[in-house]
Image 1 (cartoon, helix red, strand yellow):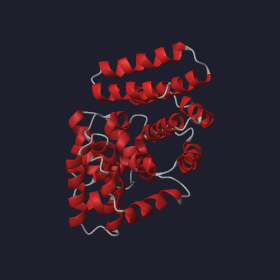
Image 2 (cartoon, one colour; image 1 turned 90 degrees about the vertical axis):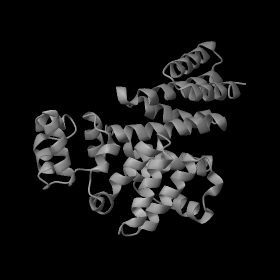
Image 3 (cartoon, rainbow, N blue to C red; image 1 turned 180 degrees about the horizontal axis):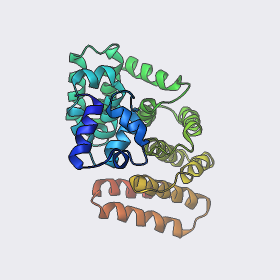
Image 4 (cartoon, rainbow, N blue to C red; image 1 turned 90 degrees about the horizontal axis):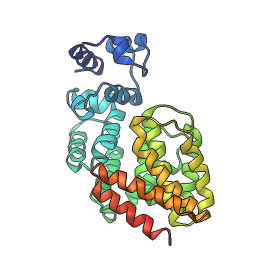
Length: 283
């Protein structure tokens, strides 16, 4: 089944008009042409559309023809892998995607397999298993990018641990400048994820001055429900940095409040990691 046909099937099953279904993501006229296959929807807009209408990305892609998934819509596969499998630590889903790519006639599949192997190593927390030649090739690809698309942005966010601080500072500053003001929710999530990583690095390296530009950029992104967690993490790291420049206990109290909130929603292991990070970095 084609993307437009599948979107129409879901829309009709929910009893929605094209205007209601497209919402604020696409104009009704453009969306109508997507359903009729005369327009192609971007990867970012498709994922936003699925999320806005409470459709499982995994379920949606599972119903597309393999040829559509892998040849014509390559970018969707990576958005799926990164946003669904990677962030859910789903090694099984990543392996399914890898198997499908291996069996496909996708051109240049070596690049896709290289990226997936890196994600699998990260999910398994087995960084040493990554072939060094593969790692250098991946790092060079990100480093040499003149412009970041969503795929490269996702890739960089997940691979920042492979770079030294100054290289991350350069790449992150370039990326934040490119996407500042973009209101696409997927872009905002990835941008905040990159900023959170950089604030983490700034604290570990005690380079608090460099953190200011990233805090300012994060604060320019308007709060909304889908980025609530990311905003909380920005506040957490910001208050650790503020404590180092002004040893006021109120900053630590805010950090503890956020840790407690994260614990209350059931992310117990993550809240423990946050508490350990705080304790280690306020000495």
